[in-house]
Length: 629
Image (cartoon, rainbow, N blue to C red; front, side, top):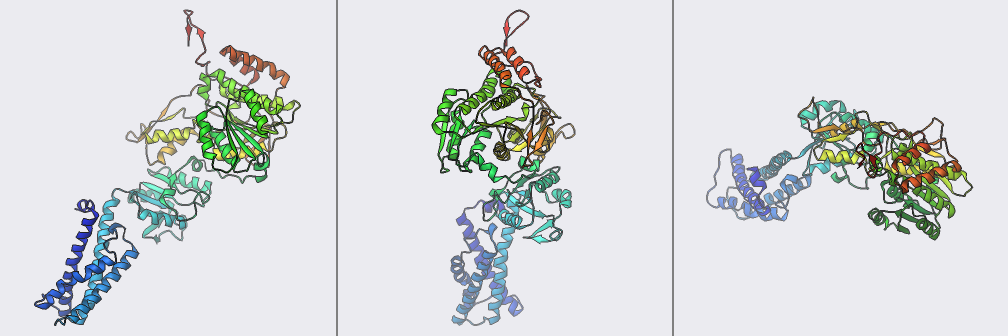
């Protein structure tokens, strides 16, 4: 029956409501006379026409006041007030008409009884209908708890009450003063009640409405909720919320920032602007994940102009379009970092003062399959940029390095460590360019990052692929990493290696499990064969290792920023490094993979390859003397 009523057209619903109100008003008049006279009363003669005329008087008034424009399931206090006004006016007009018609037998008290009963029944019918329709519609809604009974939580509950997706069933708050009370008809619970109330209230999702809470506090809340079969979503922080009323659209999924649970350190504004404000700045690899974030933050620091340098047309177009409306001179330049003529022309033409060198091949297995290009781009691309920077009088050159350069087990890490050594060797020579190196671990949301991969796999129903149960990685948000890179680059005096404090290492296996649980799903394994998502362990890929490190040695000093450390590590003189680089170039030109690896191990003694040479062009002589790949 309810489904039939719900599916009617709006006009048909209004006609049915009008008919019901008409019959109800006549019935109420009969009841009013019966109550006044003390027995069941049925009118005769002229009085019956006055009773039957009640709908004729009421309907124009009800229509005028908009009683049939209001959607019953969303009726609120304002709509109830309008109903009271309309019914009161109807009762008054009906009484006047009855007396003016000079019909005998209408006691004056009947007018008051009619008014009271009409209010009770007309309002009551709408509230009952609202409860029935909402009860029906709530069956298909997500039953949610709102964590946080402050202003943000109350605003969110208000928005949820009119939502077609969510049905709030309770609030959670840490305040003992609020616990046990009711807000907007919802009971406020303690977090200690969570294990009991999730099954009791049939909760599907928990919405955390604490925008002013620190990242550490949010991480604590998420860790408390993680064991339970509910998905978790958050309101963003105060700084991210626009001024005004909080809406459901503000909610987002739990991000890795909350899982890491580390508060940021206030940036040093002087360091941020030192090499950027009113300077001509180049970002190589501007279309990549790190490069594009560098560009976003550089634009906000008011450079004289910004040059976006990248060899990928699509990546360059994308970041240029994003930044094109910032009111700043921005120039997208297509080119390879190995093209010294192109680099020289660009640097001279614009008078470049600061370079952030983010261009690199960083995907470990991909570089293993393409060793020569990895060395060419990461080592010789850095060398080309650095030499052109020196020749054209660039003031500052900052290299974006990686934790994989520390005791590398793969070609990519070895190339980045070699690039560090190249800059340090050039810096020791007589030149005016200030070189700096900034080394950090994995950034969230970068190309190839495990987080978006896990999200896609969970959304697809699994399996979630984890390399090894014991794999550990450091993580940092891209925006935080880039902010620290800019500050570290301003601290350099002698081509030091700056290492970012990445916080506590994260076990990838535990990260996958948390993401599954926080999506409201259960892990499928031998103990839970009816679970939702299976975790599949695939084994180490080419060149991967279980643990990453940030320091080669223990000689490290603090800086003014507690998240930036200054490392002192072994260097090579240019006279020692230069002939090795020449041999590396010959090995690339001749596609000599074996020599390439030997030379990398010579220049980076800590390089211990995790796998055999895997370049797709690497040839070996098989037992039957035929070439194999």
